[in-house]
Length: 365
Image (cartoon, rainbow, N blue to C red; front, top):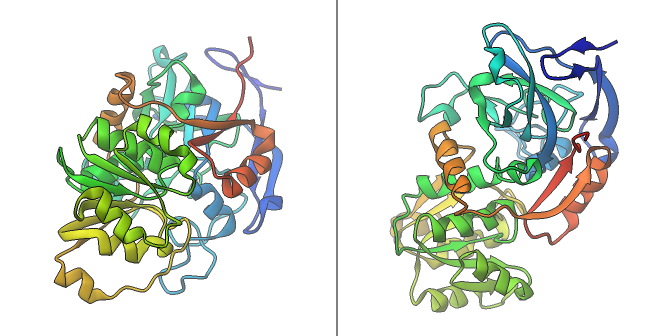
């Protein structure tokens, strides 16, 4: 038995892929679960695409550690996850039903979802202690339906569900890193992990929106032309044995800002190539979360180290406006059907990918 939605018949059960406990991809299980019912001020969204992020992998692996023990298994808030949990933060879909206090005229709207709920005021909502992040503190987008506050739904920036889903967390994170680093036109920026989701969007935003001069770090220099098309002025391989010298030569001096998502393997290089008074923004640790730091380097060079997670609703809306203006291009590496979530995560983790990996529920004709 299903229920009558305002746009389409809504089944009582839906397909979802849930994490059952910390572990490998075998802990991702396809299940039939009840379709959620929108509460007051919420809408029901039929999910057509959900992009993958490193946070999906770290959620399953328990890879965030805790405040007291870096190796302890925990989720994004550095606390235990309540399993089973449906992962996925990057949802694009269509509103098909509404809860109380919501005008049903919104049914049929194609939307992307701002990825977290917070009680904090505008401008600091991403720093609140009570953040509810989709996929961490509540179920996310590896499913056919999701309920979400109507006020956190935004008009889809592009006509494609797959393309629209590709921006939500990666591009949002890159945007926030640049905003928080106070980047101004003409500054020289080094971007690590430049072929990944955050890095590839950061190259575009830094060069085409903020007017910066971008040096992109990649593994394989065969991607050099692609990176230049995205806006990089110089492209270097992080495998170089003379990397700090390479960066300083490419920048014709030291750089103003580093945007880093790699972590430990490149951390010392990032500090070394910054000018006095430079800024390092970090939003990830894809290749190592624990590093050694000579604190003297920080204070003697007057460096600022800036931690970046998520961002504000204002930044999210600014980002969507720029996407609609086609200043930033969607970058899709590969699309998998929802039921192939295990394959998608394995591909995401092992592949030297260029852009985003997406899970898709195809609309019925």
